Length: 392
Image (cartoon, rainbow, N blue to C red; front, side, top):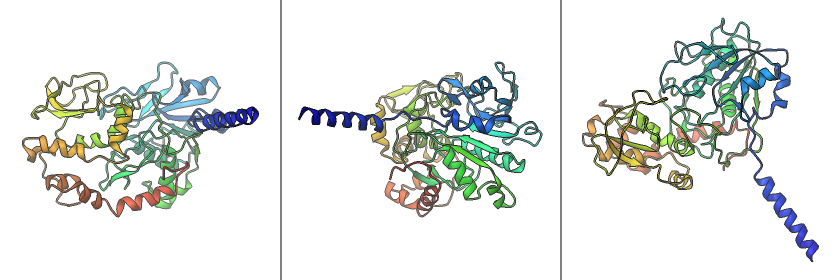
């Protein structure tokens, strides 16, 4: 009897251990990509989040005698600490001596000259799974340049910390903060998203079918599914300092199209939101700091809401696998001069526009209903390109 009990205990422990295997990013599995880079001139698209364990990818590759010739960087720069929207200048990486070319400044796509001494491109940046987060737009521009200049591309995949749901309206207008018709919370890893851009021929190429000429290799995450609650080891950008900000970013981030402060210039960006003219007990004062130079309402007392007081689990419960409309509604209802709430603009006359719906008092049910059928169609498209078990 004791022997049977012991065997059952061993089985239970083994099962529990296997269910909690350490998630490995693409970069953390060098045996899968180092052979592809051997004897090649390599161009890296990276930032501070591009790590192999705790070591920067560029340092790791150079130590492995990989011939890295160039570094490309997205918004926030190589160190990931520049203020949002600031144009990044070209530079030289002091440690490696490699040229650093900004793709968030005068240009968003490498030129033919930029790629002259590059045989193969590697993309490795931590994304957060939100349509208006610019890293996926940078990925698209890099892919387009890879096709046009006949360069293979390796994407070292990373888990999506918001990859456990899909929700929100589908992006309708095209800008660098929304190049494709995807849900605000798209529920894909960067590797899955790259596969979708190719498969749906969404790259800005002529003809569109040229997208399928791209030699794309995705180095998959190990032990990851879309049910995984993954916390990046470093902040993906200066105003997403922790997992609570990352979880709240999709819903609070939309408010940057309004007069509301979202906490930039505080220690709790995207965990607090408010305005100087709102009357609530909670207050905060945005100040200029690294990563948030000249924030909205700098040195002014803002009144608003504090979501930082909740635990990670409480925030997950509040989100409930949805793009939250209630935060926007609360802010709008509390703002005294509502005609100026959406930055004084009249906004769209389209009843499917979220600003229009909030102004006209649409119920949450009716707002969510208006996201269809585009949201359902996106979910179908997304399913075709998943590399990992889905949450449903």
